[in-house]
Image 1 (cartoon, rainbow, N blue to C red):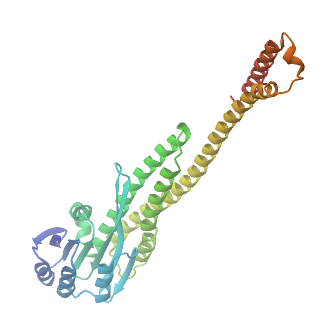
Image 2 (image 1 turned 180 degrees about the vertical axis):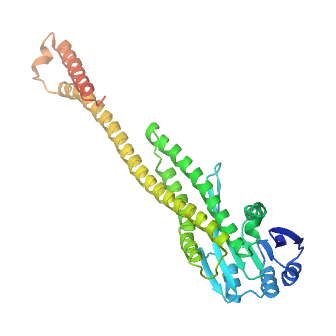
Image 3 (image 1 turned 60 degrees about the horizontal axis):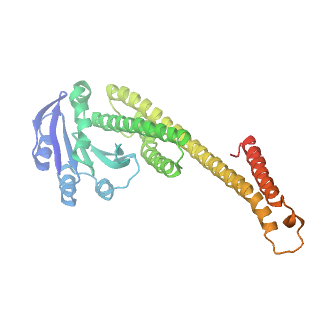
Length: 322
């Protein structure tokens, strides 16, 4: 589905396109570059893009197959950037990682996404808010895509950090086992990390001027975005380690709670055993038990049982088992 298509010249949108063929026509006439955004494309749409813009077949195949790691590759006069977008739902705890492919040529920048159309909102907003950068040509689209991806990932990381803090509070202030919550959250952090860490290599490649030499204005913005990406990567590593430690702490607290329960059960079992032993002895069917004929035998047995129960209870409370 075609979401957005227009020609940018001197940093501004100077012509709109209503179809892929119309966008290809705009790229061949006039100045500037054409921006095309396609969401959840069918095979026919990718074939049309490939035919109208002469996209490399292997690059189109990568976009069609999906499940690519973030990368930057050159196919003749076309550069393919593969990156990931992140969306986190605080209510359900669902983290969605989608792939975004962008083809950049001399007169075009084509973005293909498998997610909802609003994935392109941040990219277009950067085009509109930075006309001086947009005027530098289609390589500005590489910065806009990477900047959007990093900013979205930073917002998701902040939400994941908030969630980790709430889980941490539950571990140390609650009585329920949080192992499942920690594991699921750790998996989300690792999932985001797998999407964010490889982007660092993309930034390194672009800053070396490979495979395209970006204008100075774009390179400066790429350096800034690269710093954010590195800080993001470090935060995810630290958060992952924090969750590892939190899982160990949770298991330790579970073990402590189980030990406390076992102590209480053992203490009450010992207390109950004392009168049970006494009643068991005097309940045996023997004729010659001296206390059976003693007038104070019954009272003596009760006193002994009460004293034993009291002594055991006092001792277990003293050592902290009750």
